[in-house]
Amino acid sequence: MIPRYITPEMSAIWAPENKFKHWLNLEIMAAEAMEDLGSIPKGTADEIRTAKINVARIDEIELETRHDVIAFLTSITEQIGDKGKYMHQGMTSSDVVDTGFSMLLRDSGLQIKSRLEMLLRALEKQIQAHRETLCIGRSHGIHAEPTTFGFKLASHYMAFKRCVARMDDAISEISICAMSGPVGTHATCPPAIQNNVAGKLGLKAEDISTQIIPRDRHAMFFSVLGVIAGCIDNLATEIRALQKSEVREVEEFFHAGQKGSSAMPHKRNPVLSENLSGLSRIIRAGVIPAMENMTLWHERDISHSSVDRTTLPDSIMACDFALDRLAGVMDKLIVYPKRMRENMNTLCGLIYSQKVLLALTQAGVSREDAYKLVQENAMKIWDGGCKESFLVLIQSDTRITQHVNVDDLAALFNPQDYLTHIGEIIDNALKSS
Image (cartoon, rainbow, N blue to C red):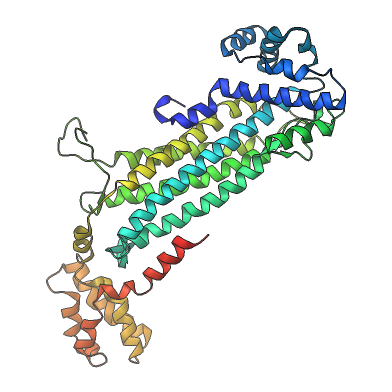
């Protein structure tokens, strides 16, 4: 991932030095477990512990060996001398690489979870501020019935809250230690070593790892990222749609000195939300390769390796960056309640058509006849414009007023009626576990 889309926190997790530090720590813990079993001399782990990570030297050795784990082991052996021959006893490369990768995924998952929680706080702030801010609800992009902006955001809040629970499950799924030796039989690396290291690291020991950690675990982790990306894109798209000039109900914060267009000085574009939609594509793009990594030859091959090193980390970094950006967008979002009310009234009262329909059916008119009467009057405005309000039209239609009097019809045109249950629903959403 290019630096433009990496946060400092996630950059530190995926830095090569951090990866090699995990590998070194795994070798130290494995050596301690082997010492306890008596398979290597006492003091080996302490000797390994004195080694330092030298990324440049590892890269230099790998140019010759064409094998990153051997390059890493060689760089450590150069520092610790004769005791180096006891390091990595009975282990295979995947024992270090895959368990280290699990730790990177676990740490990344925890980082992403913290971003989700930050976003939830920003959303809650806007929900509380606008729980009764009336706006028009739209279905198919067409005005439907009144809602509130806070209620609209509460739906997104719950989606991201579900993402936190999914991420918890994904972190648990991937927090795995596998140290089982070639083809996973533990023939040269007894289960006690794996169990010992897993316990020290707070990981779960893999049940059966063949030679690698089964990639269905990774597939689940990145599937969760894909769902998070969908939630990000959904909210970003809503903001973009509401910021269109003819709508202009909300707007991204515009910094002093910021420019919207090289040609048109008046432009204030939803560039952050557009960027979030683009980043969501990158995150989702990691799901299919993660799924395809599940299919490997026999006990293992390395067809998954290039995906593990490129696409999957990019998806993680993009997700972390996107959540951080979205939290900022929502925290500073500019909301225009007056414009929301203006838009709500642009169809001259057609948004109350269902209430008129229901009033007629409750007065004894069949649903079919009531629908026909209401739609006939509604289409006069839809096709001919707001020459008269919808209320005036239905109050002038004796076929309607013979069933519902004009005062009762007027009482139906009250947007506050739509708020009856909204407060309760929002409160339940915000306090739900």
